[in-house]
Structure formats: C-alpha cells, structure tokens
Amino acid sequence: MTEDAGAEHAGLFDGVFSRGGAGTGSRAWLRAMLDTEAALARALERAGLAPPGAGAAVTETAATAPFDPGALGRRAALSGNPVPALVADLRKAVPPDAADTWRPPPTGARRWPRRTATR
Image (cartoon, rainbow, N blue to C red; front, side, top):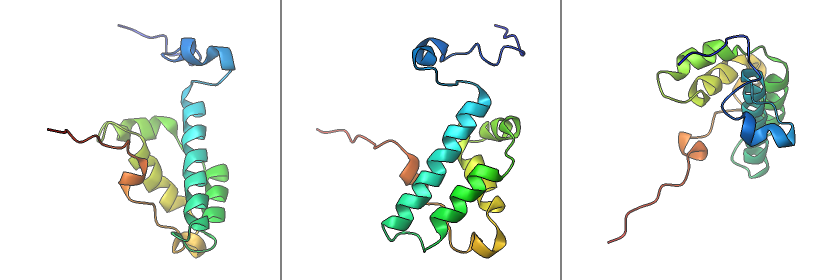
C-alpha cells in the first residue's frame, strides 16, 4: 500500500470525523494530545495531586513550545504510542522555574481500564 505524502488531509479517520469538521492530520492530533496533557495537569492540580502552578505551567508550555509531530512519531515506534515521547518532551519544555512543580502522572492515568477475567 502506498499513500500520497502530500495528502495530509486524506487519512484513516476522514470518514469518521469529516462530518464534525475535526482535523485528522498530524498537527491536529498533536494539538489534541497537548490540550489533553494540559487539562490533565490542571485537573491534577485542582485535585491536590499536583502542586500549585503545575496546571498553568503545563498549559502555557503546551500552547507555546514547538513540538515536531514527525519526531514524536518516530519515537512512538518504541512504545507503539506517541504519548510517552510527548510527555518526555513536554516535561523538558516546561520552564526550569516551574519544572519542579509538575511531574507527569503515572502512565496508568492514560491507560484504558483493564478488564480482569472472571471465573
């Protein structure tokens, strides 16, 4: 199978998302992941699970730091998921004076609930 490299807009999820006008390209997915990480940091702060200022620091960094979707995608091959690479880069991008206020949550915060087999 081949894919037209210039057809960023023509993708796997076009039929699913096209009716709502949601972007399905790499930059749209990256923006959604960054927005999610920022929201998670704010929620953890509100719940008292992250220190004051953590939510603002992550939100600001997620909105302004340059992240490369291609580089994240290449690193995603190691885990099958771009989130670990994104969180590592986001952690490095948080300003040094705010870095100590935010620690990424355990990976379990991003996983689907596991079903256990019942006998």
